Picture 1 (cartoon, helix red, strand yellow):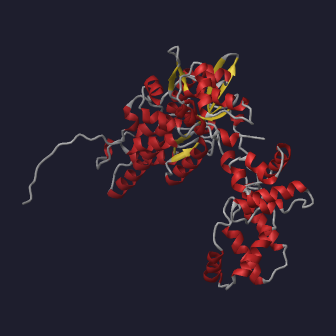
Picture 2 (cartoon, rainbow, N blue to C red):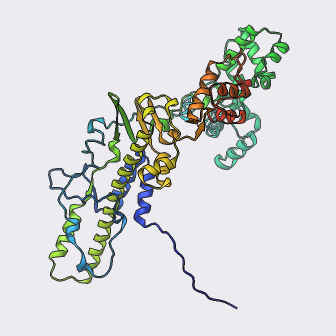
Picture 3 (cartoon, rainbow, N blue to C red):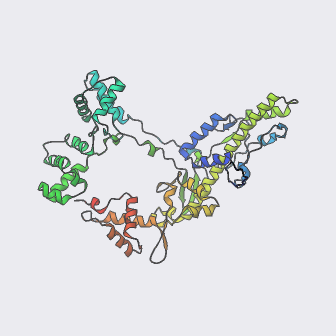
Length: 492
């Protein structure tokens, strides 16, 4: 039997405007411009002042108190159009502190510089150009193109010859034998960069070694090690290699150094890392005679306004003596676009305020670090510490920290890199685990590479310095810094 009952629940639901603000807050500077252009294309009621005719009088939606919740409360839309207050949309221009004219927290217009991106042929285009120069039959040329297109970003051929044959038959209508594909693969492996087209690391290294001077005995020994003793080499069992090959430490060191010169990822050698080039800092911190000055990247402060033509539509409606159904529908459409434009401008302003508020709190919390750049001056800091200081939710601080960069006089860093857990010293003082990692890095950097320090020894050194840390914690920090175990750090 179906039973019905009534139930009351208290739910917290975000408005569309709050969701828009949250999404904008997560957007880094490099993507903000694209997001604004997308909004400008979708909403004709929104205009970019930098693109508008600056000789015309400018009207802009007035500032609101960022702490006022009404920033994200939209106006009710209904059938009673006479309740519209057109003056809300017809304010005089007031270029506020969030535009590019923001003197204290905005970059100067002259500082707006585009980051250059190197333009050169891609890895695959270089291989294709080399293929074009080889005299081949039409069939072999197609096979060569198929092989090049099947290489991964590291320059390796991870697919089997059988799979390539199937691809050629189905996609190119070319029926090739295994020997034909193998022969073309050898041709590709003769291209530059050396090692391209290999099917594994061993083959990659051998291709490069066989292109070197074969009259050099060091090259012969290197080929022997890679071909027959690669496992011992990668595990740095140098004592075992000396016994097997009948070499002393000096001879083995020369051979090992020759192997270490090889490129294990030939596909990376000519590829431009555009992702690194596109890191644009959201903030700048400069040291002005011992006083830190925080500025917001000017690209975070676009000059947006309500469209003048849409304001004139409201003026026309206000003066109209008769308001028929079509006019009311047109005005409703205009109102929706104006509301959307206002909400977007508010969200952008709220984003700017939140970014500055959060970064300012981080800067003052880590003031000594930003003055010196010494990681040992980093204080333990978690998201809650900043959230409590600025009176915002931890999730808001997290969204800022996880996607924003700050440029300092000693480098550009992701904000989340300044957050760390606390470790208590023997004296009872709380220090950042960043400080411990820095000491670990220094200890490993100064160690005798012929006898590298094991994790147990590193834990003892830290204990002598007042940091009572277990061996497993040392191992965790070492792995976080991408430092291999002692055995793999060993050098001849």
